[in-house]
Length: 614
Image 1 (cartoon, rainbow, N blue to C red):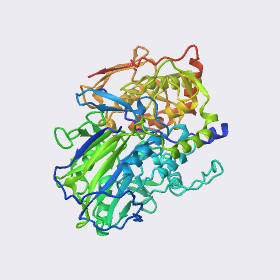
Image 2 (cartoon, one colour; image 1 turned 30 degrees about the horizontal axis):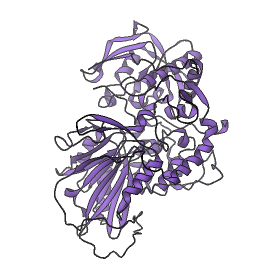
Image 3 (spheres, rainbow, N blue to C red; image 1 turned 90 degrees about the vertical axis):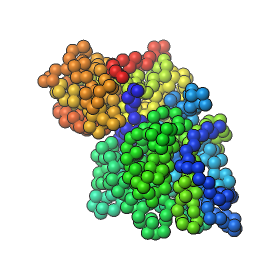
Image 4 (cartoon, helix red, strand yellow; image 1 turned 180 degrees about the horizontal axis):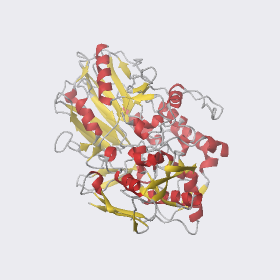
């Protein structure tokens, strides 16, 4: 199968300061076993217990031994308040006859409606998230340091979330501000109103302050309602420092996910909390891209691979369910715990396109979850339901502030330019833009390389607003490249350049390849029938038709994250004679403006620079 760019790969900080200065639910179900519980295992009522306060209503009489607890969860929202465009706003669904269809999905106006409807009749309902609620956000949220997204999550009645790697894009101090509130240290308050912060706790059990050795934020949180107690432990992937800028994780240490969760599970048990859910910002890769794929066919866990499998197999059996994220995939799987018992592991894709509804049956006698009855399903956040009026007002408020910057046209396209596949048309376009920028700074520039995870959305032909079809607005460009990296130039030997290409499919990138997008003139063959670095066929690498000379010097343009060795490309960090350029979105804008017009729009590149053998 083609190697696809994993959308969780990060880029760095968000561009804000200079911008403001400038201006029918479908279900997939997973069940651990067919064991039935007494009829008393039911929800009842329509109240929600919040944050350990136990504010349920009703007389509470007639409680049976078993109580169903609803766990609603989602992950990797990335500030997508408005419905995502193009393929980023669709999910694939398997039909009964084996065919597939796509469904438009996402947008917090619809997510709010779906969650509120799902909670009806469930007095014992918790809403949790698996990290990356913010970061890599579209302009509507990113321009304002993601304050709009935190406001939206408050309105969604989110109870708790783990941190993800993107929560560290702007560093620990900014994350603390998102949690606790206060105006931005340089931007101040927006709309003359102080930011209140998150009503829900961010959990960061495995993120430690290097000086104190203590967790940066709360390691766990306990939900309580009428004698029912469920503990949540939140972690991000241990490898966060490898995929976030050094400045973003300065002064922090990231511990092993399994060891951390097991440590705090014991602590919760000592406190009498025996029902535990782990919120883990790390994930897996299901065998199918369809959200309702049967992950457990033919056997438990057979349909998923990736880091979450080993993590799940080693987390203590005291943990009853895992809510995961990071890979932007959708799955509802059972993976055996260390005792060999099946345990639910879920992920709800990304960008608010899905939510997961899991039933945890709580045994009041033992205080634990009766795991044989855990059931879970992913549901589509369809756009055929009424919009939540409070979310519409929120979007309208922030859109008014963003409009003077976001609505400005910067280019024209003749069709959708997508980011999907081993090599994508949009990846080629961005690499060409950075190459053109590099040539303008230094005529000796030979090529450009772009990391696929830095491309956050497609460019769509259909207008997103009143700009007209084919018009690319600044807001759309921002959504594609929201991190404000600079375009840097460095010198590399030919041997180093070859090594860079091999690092796409070896070392930390062997299990989940990160295929760099390349500028025009660079070609090579990627042989997926081989393994490791051999998948890059050395003799096939050509620049403008000529083989790479191992001893020659090549001038390469890339964003500052890649130039610093990010995403496992350590050799890119070894370049010399560095020239730090301008903002990468500015380079993209310059290219679109110079090479397109209303009468001569840019067509999608052919994406034929990398020959893939399968």
